[in-house]
Every structure is written in C-alpha cells, then in structure tokens.
Length: 315
Image (tube, rainbow, N blue to C red; front, side, top):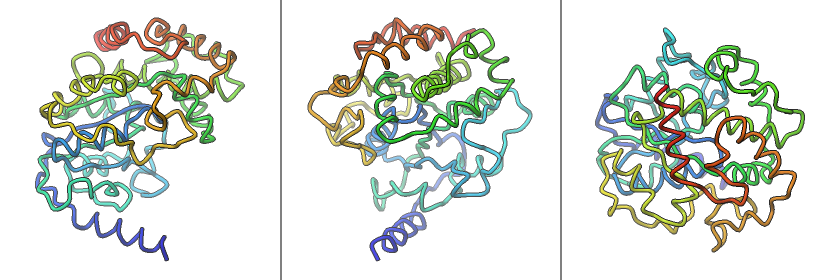
C-alpha cells in the first residue's frame, strides 16, 4: 500500500504542475557528475527562485522516448541532431510531465513558476549541444572532489559500466578528449574506472559549455561557505540572500556515503579514504590537469579550479 500511495502522490504532483512558459528562455540546466551535490542545489535554487524543479528526466529505463540517449552517450556540440531530440525539447520548453521527473514539485506547491530548473547527472556528455543550439538556456555546473564522489559511489555500489561505454566512443576519446592519455589509464579496477568516469564527465562539460557559458559551483566549498552558492544563484536570476534552509540535507543524502550533510564535519568522509584510493585519484587528476585544484587531502583550490574551467571553455 505505501508504494501505491507513493506512485499516486507522484502522479498527482506531476499532473498539478503549473508551468506557464513554453520556451527555452525560461529553462535552466543544473549539471554535474553523480554524487556531486546536484540534488542539494536543485532544492536550494528551486525554493529561492520559485522554479519548477525537474529531477533527472532523461531516463531511458523509465521513458522509452529517451531510448537513444543511453547514459554516457557523447554528442558533439555541432551534431546535426540530438538523439531523442523531440523529447528533449519537450523537457526544455516545459511540456514534459512524468511522475519521476516531477517528484520534487512539492518544493513550491501551488505556485506559478518563474521558470524551470532541470537537474541531470547525464548532462555533462551532451548539454554542450543544448548550449550551442539554445544560447538563452542558463547553465550551472557543480563539481565535487573526486575522492568524495568515489567514496560515495563505492558505498552505494555504483558500477563502472558507463565509463567503459564512454571509452568506446571514438568521437569522444579520440576527438574531444584526444589530447588526454585516457587510454593509458589502468581501468581494470572499479576505483580507477569510477574516477576516470568522473574526469571524462567533467572535462567534457568544461570543454563544451565551460568558461562564460555557465556558472561553476564547487560543492566542497559551498558546504563550508554558503556564499559559493551565490555564483549559481546569480546565473539563474536569483538574489543570493533568498537562499534558505541550506543546512537541510537533500533527499539524496545517505548517512554511509560521503555526503557532507550526513555529519557535522564537511570532510568527515576523508576518514574512509585509504592510500590506494588517493593514488588512483592522483593519477587521474594528473592526466586531466586537475591535480592542483583537488589535492589528495580532500581540500579544494577554488582559484585553480576556476582557472581550469575557464581555460577548457576557451580553447
């Protein structure tokens, strides 16, 4: 019975969504690799900006309309078409309804939305195409220390399968990322595969919609200094002082993972990191030029991270 009620509640929320706009000018993308804090930002920005929160809509396993957008599929910015393009355009223009995608609709109940914020961990591989085709779409990208994402993904049992699919795409590995020694990485173990996936997703994002085309938010910095969230808020047209309830963990928080809201210590997850994991992360970071931005002590050099993002976005 509880499961039935949950499905019914989701359906009711989806049907009741009041999204008055039918254009891309009122659409914004919230992008980031998995377990990077994207849900926390979705909830914070949607509350503050009275935005319709659209939660990870591009799920081929839930909606066959996205069957051509297999997770991890790379699409060049100048491709003639985007796989499942018509369905993607429906999401961007507010026409799309699905109980899964609208599960966060209760954040702003019975309100006329000022726009929509589409949160998706699959964006890094093809949102550059959207940015190129729809320059009016605003983009916020969140990036988190790879040691933290590795710790979280490992606890939750994430599979490296998607990374192997990414590496099998010549347009990506030999094209966009052809200058990086990705094929030289030893990806036979799950840890290296998961960190390589993190790197591929974030480098692809930086090279296809980095620099001035988007706002970059460091999750690690944000949990210790809430002013970091102002960067994304301003890109979305939200006054930073409207951000509230920031100490509230997102619904995706897992007490045993690396979520910084699960304990009072934002870097408490470092106690679960061993030397072998540090070595894996250091090797991948060196390969993609992010070793200065993400020291293996779990800290973030915010300036170095921004310089990397800007340089990637201005080839």
